[in-house]
Length: 133
Image (cartoon, rainbow, N blue to C red; front, side, top):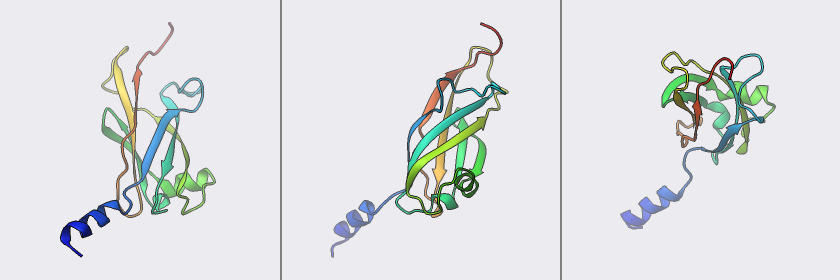
């Protein structure tokens, strides 16, 4: 087998997890109890079936805010260990210490599977408006 053919076969064999359709879970993203908690969902696929052994990195403007062990998320949401496709529900408690009223920010997520491979980074954009209209 030539070196070039061997490399192309390796490149075609799986990859990291994939996250798609990052979205608000309801008609509004905010929790009724706390306007700085965003209620989100994201679909995942992971051919290795090891996502539950990894972590989910919640980011604001590309900077990590929290890393959640996905084993805890899978258990809390009734997702079986080894599941290769599904939807994760996320409540993200934002720390917006550097964003002013009316300021723009983005929220993104990156998953790392149990083999240490990172996913893509889907993102949503928001404007900060606290208080009355």
